[in-house]
Image 1 (cartoon, helix red, strand yellow):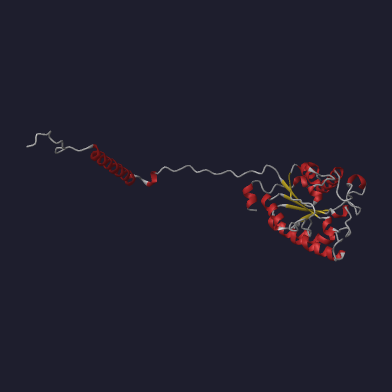
Image 2 (image 1 turned 180 degrees about the vertical axis):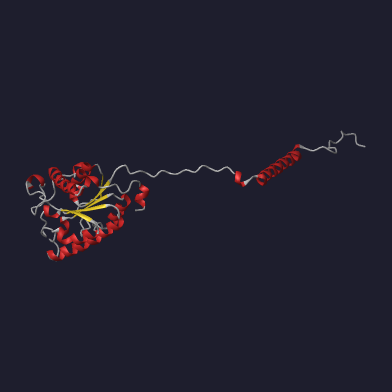
Length: 277
């Protein structure tokens, strides 16, 4: 026999920690799964806790929104009518309406402006109006549409084309705003465009009546500024000064009062209504 020390070994019934721990974990996981299964089998579906339901309040429109589609007369110029001194701002403020401008200089019903793609009835402007969904929409005429300096058209041909464009545009705005009040303001005679003055009633009257659009015209054939043109028109001979915008607003307000604008309703009281007119 060898005289060395006895070899160490594990006797029967002895297990190392490495063997015990995995077995313990398996048992714990198995018991947990069995418990969860039992709970699920014994649960009454009718007793399941229901989450509370919430109704989102629509975003309110606290006041009537008035939109204004126009050219530089409505957008304002260096001559006047900037910021809150524009005739459109003054009109909206008189009635407590929220003013939203869709105006761009150099545009008209036929004239698309510098880019050529944004006349008054364009998809771009129509989209902007539909996103706002004004309770009242003011449209204007524009002297840009009667400037024949670089055109081979006659005055009559241009006016016929303008009448068609206005009718088409008004029809589209009416489809987009079936409940809104729509007003067309004839501004052209006040500046005496090179193509001549504009008789809005004769050109657009039938179409405006068909689509329930009110018409506001200058108080006389001499235009909006017959009393003091030098004071009301800027040095460029075309655009109103701040005093001119004030004078124009006062005359428009007088006609709006005749139309009982104070009692015009708010047709879209929240933005969810406006999204589905």
